[in-house]
Image (cartoon, rainbow, N blue to C red; front, side, top):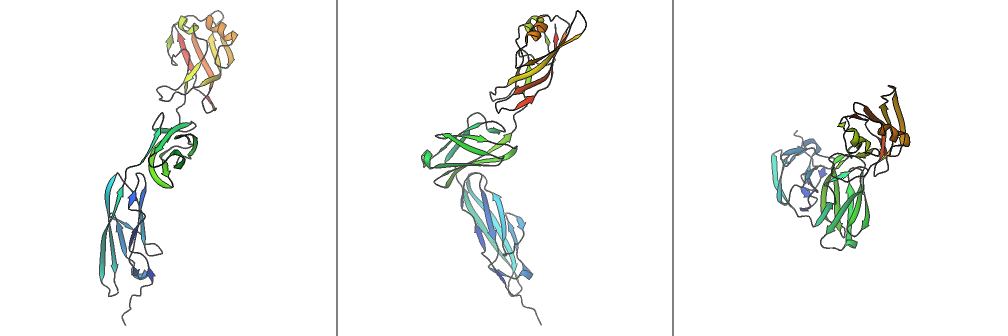
Amino acid sequence: GEVAVRFDTYAAIIGQNSNYLMPGQELEITAGVGAFSKAAAPVVTIGGQTYAIGAEGTATAKLPGGGVGSRTVPVRITYTDQEGKQQVIEKNVEYKVGMANASIALDEMNVLYVGYDNIVTIAASGGGDDRVQASIAGGGGALQRIGNGKYIAKVNSVTDDCKITVSVDGKVAGVSQFRVRTIPQPVGTVGGFASGDNVNAGAFKAQSGVGAYIKDFPLNLRYTVTGFTITADDPATGDILEETCTGNLWSPRAQNMVKNLSPGRMVTIDNLRAQGPDGRVQKLPSLVYYIK
């Protein structure tokens, strides 16, 4: 005879994790029919996309909340009833994305840098500093409170999705998203001259050593040269003179080499190393100068 469809699984029809979100938060929608047979599972579309039915007979979608304002997500459930007829349930899930009540600002840039103490200023309405909690997710981040409304954010991996969340009394007041980037490699310089420059002999002789900096970088980071090797040809003998210097200044022998430079000679700086604000020592590209 005719086989009857037996309903053996029960679940809620449509639910959402919240009807009020803050910027950066996700909306989670769960949809299914109140009773159905596993032999005739419903088809669930949320926001125009079909989602798989789970073991509990529901489909779950996690969607970005979007911008500030009232929003609607259409949900459509198609299923077969006990009479074998196809039925459709349509419903709009409504929610609102509110304005953040917290200010989260980087003191220097809108980018978090790996290996750098990124200073963050946080303020939230509706609560004093003792009621504010801040957390960071993404980029291997960690927050350290250093004073009223002031934090140090440390990150260790590049990402476009690092979020700082601020809560007041356990309720989210604001979420801000940041990019995480590595600090560019610094370059060496003698007297501010770039490698490959033709430098007047008098200008080169006026320098006392080698420096390091990051060109066109917004953060004022200090790099200290820890050592280098300077070479120059000896016009009297044709030999190549070489001197290894510790620190950023010419050694006495290097001073004598620089003092005797004349037009037409070439100077190279090799094995150049510099220490950055994070304490790491990096090997930098070699420098070449042509004396004129």
